[in-house]
Every structure is written in C-alpha cells, then in structure tokens.
Length: 599
Image (cartoon, rainbow, N blue to C red; front, side, top):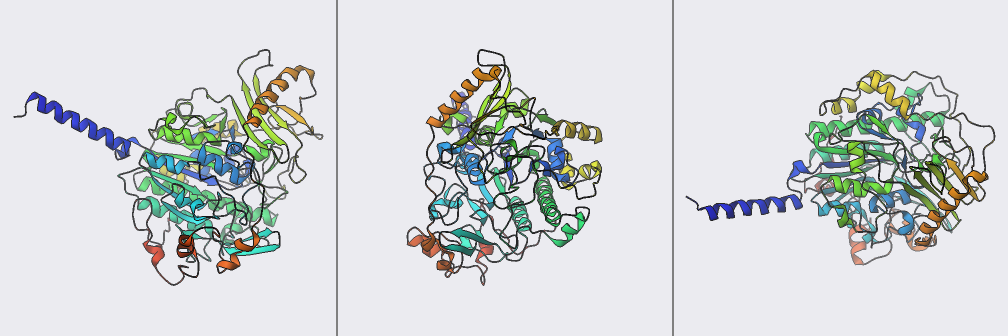
C-alpha cells in the first residue's frame, strides 16, 4: 500500500503531466477548432442577411442567425493589407503593408520579422492549414505560407487565378506576363486544372477536416478566391448550371457574379456539415468575413454591390472597408444577435488566441488588435473605442473611427469617422445603385432553415432559429439610408456621424459645432501617423520574375539552390506522378487527392 507521501507525489506528477498536456494542446476538448472563411471582395449587399433579396445566401445566413452578426466590422481597403492585419494583429502601417496589393512581379512580402497567426496557434498545439489564397509574398521561399507557420497549403500564392485554368496574368514594366499558380504545399500541382476553384478548395477543406487527428485542435484558414474578378476575357466564371438559376437577373455579369456567390455559400454549408459529421462542430469557432468591399469601377471589377454605402475597394468610405462578418460558436453564451460594437480585422489574432487558451500578453505589446472574446461571448461592451482604418502615406489618404461614450470638451458622444485627404480619382466615392434589371424574388426563410449549414448547426446547439427570429435579426442587420442627390465631397478633411449618418452623406467638418472634435480626431490620427512604417516602393522585377523562366509557372526567383530543387516546375510538376497524393496535412494524415467528395 502506497504511503501518504507516495500518493501525494503521484498526484503531483499527474498534475504536472496534465499541465504540460494543456500547454501542448493535447487536451483537445479544452481548445476549440478555429475555422476562418475569408471571402474575396464580397460586397456588403451580396449576403442576404443584410437585406438584399437578389442573391440568396442561405448557409451564410444560417451561420449569421445562429451566431453573432458583426455589423461594425472593419477591414483594410485592399486584400494584401487585410490579410497582413489578420495574420499579425497589427495595423498594416506598422508592418509596411498599407499600400497597393502585392503584384506578382514585386520583391515584397509580409516582413519575415512578423509572427503570423499560424505560428502563434502552433505554439498552443494547433495543426495549421491554409486552403486557397495567400497573397503575402512569394519571391523567396521563406515567404511561402509553409514557411510562415502553416503546416499545409493547398492553393495559390498571388492575388488571383482564373477559376478553371488557374492562370494569372499580370502587367509589368515591359508588358503583360502569364503564368500558372497552383500548389500543394511547395510543389506545383496541375492535377486540378479544369476544375472550378471554389469547388477544389471546398473539397480540400473537407478532406483536411475528415483526416484531422483529434489529439490536437484544428486551425483551418479557408481563404477563397471567390468572388474576386479574374483575368481579361475570364473576368467572371461559374458553373453554367448555377448561372442558369439566376435567369431573373438580366445583366449577364451580375448573373454570373450571383452564381459565384452561390458557390461560395454552398462551400460554407459543406464545411459546417463536415465539421458536424466528424464531431468537431460542437467544439469549434467559425468566422466568416470578406477582405474588402467589392471593386465597382477599379481593378478587377466583379459586379458586386456595396449598397447602401458609398465607395468601393481602395476607398476609405464604408463601402470599401466595412464588410459582412459573422462569428459562430457554441462557446458564445449570448448568440443569435446583431452586434454594433466596433471590431477590426486585427482583433481576430488576440481574440482567437485567447479563445484557444493562450495568454494574450504572450503575443507581445506591439499588437493593435484587442481581445474581443469576452465581448463576443458575453455580449458585453467592446473594449475597442477607436480604430485606424488606414493611412497611405504615398497619397496622404487615410481614416480613423472613434466611439465616444460621453459628452466632454472634445465633443458629443457618438461614433465618428474622419477621412483625411482626397479620395483618389481611380476609386469611387459615390453610391453604386444595385442593378434593377431583375425580377425580384421574396426572401425565402424556408431555404435558410432547411439549408445544409443550418441543419448542421441545429444538431450541436439548443437554440431554435425560427422564422420570427430570422426576420428580427435580418431587420436589425439591414442598414437603410435615404440617399441624397448631392453628396459632400472630401478634399481635405471629412467628418461623419456614423450613428445618424451611416452612409456618410453629410460632411460635418464645416460645422463649427464639431471643431473641437475634429481637432481631437486629427490628434489621434497624427499620433498613428507618427508610428507609420513606410511601405517599400512598388518596383517590378520583370526579367527574373517572368514566369517564362519557370516553364510559365509563377515561382520564387530569389533564393538558394533549395528554391530551384524544390520548386522549379521542370523538376516536379505533379502532372504525371502521384506524389501529390502522398502529401500530408498538418496532422501527418495522408490527403487522398483522387477521392470525390459529393457532399
């Protein structure tokens, strides 16, 4: 029989072992799976939970109505900067990533001194997987996602690819360049040519979930290509059978865009279903968001819609930087609600790190993101009172949002936004009306309640989402503005009262009543500006970066012999071997590339 001292020693050893298991993420039930689904350039008005009847999104809506709709969620005005902010928890002005999106001919990427969300979650024992788009640099192998904390990558490295042939064309100093961009981990993969990209990414996400070993939690970053516009001649692409479902939309481009959104929505439903079938949904956090507003007149126009807001991608107006966003988890105690609290894309790193059991202080003191987990789960007031939208020092253009809880010498309470500088000529500062050349269809609540996503969510929660709740939440999430015929222009400084003027139609900067508030906001803005890390100049490395040098595949062109041996398409193209099938995801599980998932 063990002595008392021996028993105490055994208990102590077990406690130490348990603590160590917790640190390394082996006590799985205490760490939630984290799934981030990032849409690309999806308009505010292109999810039906925001009030539009034109494009039904029943699965995304189900996630929204069962979770928390984040109606004041801000991102950056372009994709690279949003992805940098998401991965680092820092404003892009603090990483030098605040300018234009990375061109594939540029020697530029997220600085290697920065620690990504994947690297942080790996410290907590997570398997880390990225499916889809990276767009944070690739000119050196060191910038690949598999070298930035992700154990597994399936997708592309640059800003876009065509949805079927996976080609990217890019303009440089000496012309237009064409190349292929699709990889599994660090190997070029041609196995998926001809298959719709949204479907390929969805099926791969399903495989990762199915093959996930449950001795550690899963981090899945599903960064869709959808609904980004494409190359010239293939600007919008979707399966014909899906396009045909939108015969009520007369504009052919908008019709194809609607089909692209539909395929994205199906993806959300399939991911939720697979999580539930593999007994993982009941211990998961699912975040859905878009990286910026739809481009209406600039860049890769996709016929999205940012109504009722002004502006588009690259703009500081709400249409460019406020996007559809939803978070769902059974860990949220007060769900099925619309949150009007300020939240910024930088907040997701500390928020999810905290939810995963990490100590936010371990992330360092240089974060701009704030831990929003208590606010989200408990429905308590957000600790965020201000956020920097962006500062682009090259054109002296930026914006900041402030929430004032009380009246003081700096002005009245409210939520205010200051825009500094003039909206660039290349981006829209006006409203873009929703194309009315369509036969409207009534919002079908039954499709939401019977959707694949809602069925999966219903199985793991006790909450009943019914028609009355759907109507109530949809009404609260819908922003309605009486559009004025003449809008205030922003040539130097604009001030908007976002509570009383959410569509930014009345510039208050000329009203003497707000002089002290403007001075205060300018002070906050200037303080941020003093901390700005200048972005590198946009220099195209046309010759060495030309994909022609690599058998017309976009490949890193600066590095060691390792780069050539691993990545040169002439060595390993995956066209006539099954090496691709033997690649593993983050858990060391074999990914069966040839299997069909007809979920």
